[in-house]
Image (cartoon, rainbow, N blue to C red; front, side):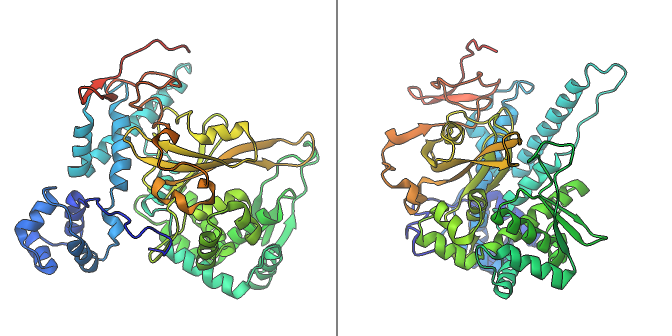
Length: 490
């Protein structure tokens, strides 16, 4: 915990270990009697903890972390809440047709997480098969494929989420490398370029755009030929982007063993997902090299997470700073735990990293009331928002557009909105919260998980009624009722 964090972080919140402690005990090959003896508590007390009858006390939690070698965050509710959202979405699909009360979803996730994950996985495979069958419906004689495993991008996203978007070993390696290279802002491309040439014999060349393409047209940002040891970089990269691409290639060359070890996780089940993970980890290393952890954390706290000032200090882009801010989760030196996203105008999420429990449904799009979409109407401006989820949790978000692409009047460009969000209790640490009534409920915008699974009944922006099984709370009767089906256009 940093000095800037509230001293009462988590005060008043009960920590329930239940299935997580039971799974951890079994992974260590211990029975209840053996673990209770190591923890210095009675077997009956441990049994009550594992069956959700007693919460963890601070002393028992500390003892568990010492005996079983886990961080206290292992017992946070973030993973459960995320799994509950995914399960609620799966059960709300029209193919399921079941009306499952929210409290039963919570009980399934809390007491039988493996079963809940299996149901979510089955639903994903069903959706994949259904989409592929629909795409092939007009191709006569072509059989529709059966259910498939999770998409590589989904596996990689879940892999980063499981690590809370923080890889201590990569951060440590990048800090050591940064100390050796000392890449000053503005000179980082030259420093890394020279190191690649001296240490690895890599020659960096600027790739000319294709002769038959439009002036300023798209070119691969980075392309490496291992045989000739030539690294091709796009001519349209800014100095910050050029430094980032060079640092990524440096990570792929010098951190091969570490990247291979990290991407060998059992959660990555295909060569494609492992390859994508290695690229993602290499870009993580690049950000950590250009923005070394301890120095960047210190500057972020001192500047109150002013992204534009951090851009100037480290010579990188807005999106790169946002992504780095979402990784500051080193024990004993944590930053604000952020969620980071990048979306396009159509709502496609191309990047999603999180050190928090905030997430949207995987199906049916996201909430149009979210400030990330408002950012497209005011390009280049940072828009803040206090957002309240259906369960009453509030988050603070900032969003701004970024544009990438070629140069010239006819060049194709892509515009995205990037967003950073944190729990409202951290918002006072951000300069963007100045002047906003954080404690006033009227300042919060009610958003949801996406129209497919959102429980709100009074939303004027709803695109469709929730599918069967999506429930809402009747505030008068305090019971769960099906959402009324209303006519929708389109």
